[in-house]
Length: 202
Image (cartoon, rainbow, N blue to C red; front, side):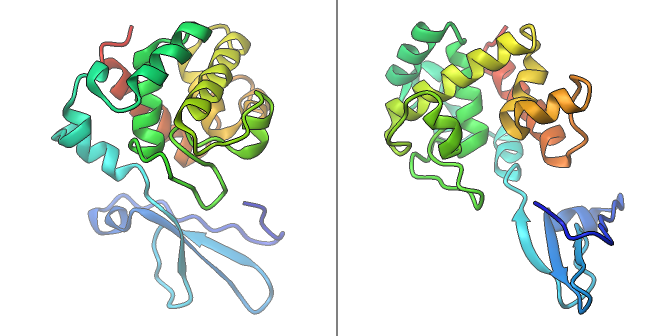
């Protein structure tokens, strides 16, 4: 999110009530300065980014429904297998990404416009010839191709490839081919890896 110069305020407080809020809040003051915080201690704060990872964390603790299924029995598995066969990306990894990105909601659309099962931005999907991001097969195929290319770009370093999937390859390169210092990315990568390992990923 681009910020107007002057002040970027992100409070980091290790306390249960603060973390329970689970999101990022924002307001613009009378000088045009945007304030961001995970602690909405001013009545002007409005939620701008919900904690979309809490459902995945809860599922890891006590899987239910689709997340309790072996990956071979999960929705869209045939499309995942085709994409895996076409790209060489492990089917369990594709399922792990889908789990965290959309929870198997084929119609999911993020506030930034990331769409479908693998939450692809239209610009990213267009690089791989995808026309309909809401089509599960097209979405999974494009996401698998993107992951394949990211793994190749980062020498098969899974964590860097996942960080690039979340934050963009430019961000990972800009920070010296390390995980970018973004709170969302640093939560996202371990979650996908944990789901991948739980699904038998190597």
